[in-house]
Length: 454
Image (cartoon, rainbow, N blue to C red; front, side, top):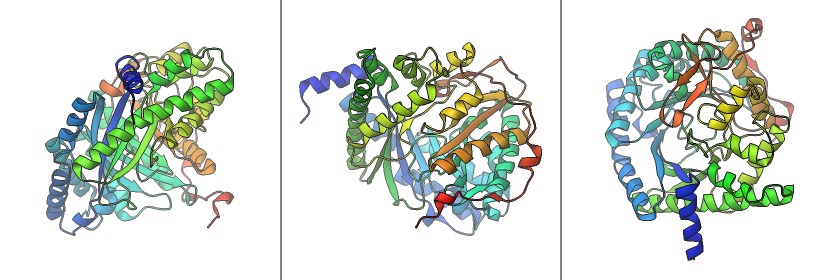
């Protein structure tokens, strides 16, 4: 039973501490849409999405009104399109027609984003995979709501360096084609190692082939709530600190569980997972960096940052696991620079560098996320940064990701505005020493020795 105290406590978290359900994401399998006729494929995709997701937005709004819980985004994820379009698409241009169909369907049902314009190439690329990857710049330039991801590595398979090299070029081309919007297209493209099948968060969401025909996944976030709770125990020992984070994560996750169960029941679609991720927004007081400062750092990036982030990430997961029947996705703490005012302040103060962010990704939930870099950065340098981050995920058996935005026409010290949840970011310097010869090698980095388990 929920008592009056818990109701009042939840209301306070919503009204004063930026608690929200960040997204209801409806995962839809498009495997039954596959055909070798491109026009029919596009028709099948549009019909499947608009039918299954017809009541998603309205249902989310009903739940918001009834329970007073803000649901910031309603989203859709679909089966990786490289798999769906493989039979019908003979060129990259053919894949772009699917991107436009996805965008049209997303607009029709009213969702904020649709993810799954994706390829899974951790061990190698098929012709369809390569065509889709090469189509990404045009696809993201010609659509508003479509998001793309490519999984290029895993602990079991190693890292496909041919795909990594290609994606350095693709990211730069995407930046160039969307330069009139400060290279915004790159904010909708994520490169993964060990991508989960059930991630509800954009831009990396897709509906994995191991999933049911349709599922409801909910992403819940509450960095402001955690920050407030820690301010109440300022100066306490680590045991108290950890217990406070766990208890707060439990409460936040219970809100997500309620929303997920309601959405599942009303839509008649099975509940998948709750992703409890401390995903910040540009709003003041909704910052993971501020939590790190509350733990005891002058700025994110100061000595002790990686240890503090490791503690935070672990306690969030421990609290969340007890509060939901199924926890999955990327659960933990996100550190996107442009979406976190505290991170932006740390960069401007000189406390946070790209190299320190890379170290922090060893213990957080994702990786180098929403980082603006100079527009004249070489493709091989971008590929080298991706390779470094993929190696961290591969060796540590965790999900890592890269979402870099080379802003065409801008350099270090300038600021780029993305708007909305994507926020704004100072452009960060990148190591200028060359990795051309390394990136230019063909083939795959093998899986680590500890991957040989079955």
